[in-house]
Image 1 (cartoon, one colour):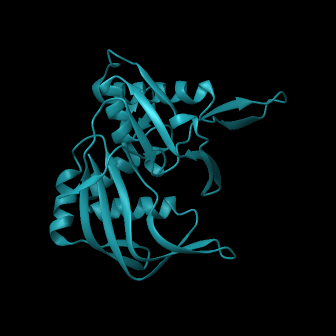
Image 2 (tube, one colour):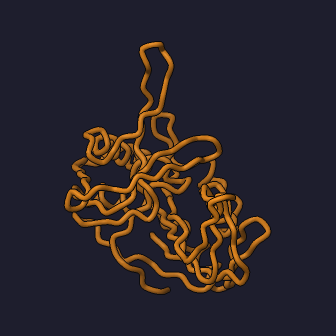
Amino acid sequence: MKYGLKFYCEKPLTLPVNYNKILQAALLNWLNDGDYSRFLHDEGYVNKRKKYKLFTFSNIKGDYIFNKENKTLTFNNEIMIVLSFYTNDSHDYILRNIRENKPIRFGENYAEFVDCGVAEEYYKSCVVDTVSPITVHTTLEKPDGRKFTYYYEPQERGFKELITNNLINKIEAVYGEKPLNTNFNIKPYNNKKQKKITTNYGGLIIKGWQGSFEISGSSEMIKMALLSGIGDRNSIGFGCILQNNFYSI
């Protein structure tokens, strides 16, 4: 299920430009269940020794002031964060926090809970917008033997192939077998150029892409893409995509 969480910053909220790690910690703490948060952060579903957390989140949406010198963003007033899970295990925690009007904490700063909406999405061919960058990578070797990370662009064949394989592996991790229909395709909407985003995540440079994409394929593959995130590193805030608007709960 996919949620749109709204909070109000009574005081200005200043975060570094590369705030993924801070936001991940804030969201897991907001869920307020040690075992479930630990499962999402450390365990997940395992397939071929790789862990799939099957949740993702968006960038923070809201009015902000960018400080070029300090490389910070200062948010004022209302902010929105999209939080998405493949399973419904999170729903009870979300509902409890809604009833309690639980604020979200960023270090010493708090933002008050305002509202929560649920995305109404359909698992069929559609156009989606990224609300956090899609990143797809592989490790290659230089002629001298040194390894390096190569990030695929949306126009490259490897972009679609690695995303498809990732979705298959996630489904197999949950259900113990591959989907019967592994058909999946993704391409930039109307062949428009996507915006390149570079993020520094604790010293790791991650390159991703933001924009609109057309996705098609089996309903099982599309559902996994919409709910768990698409591409790599979903659980640290990459690959969150949105099909339609939210309705309040």
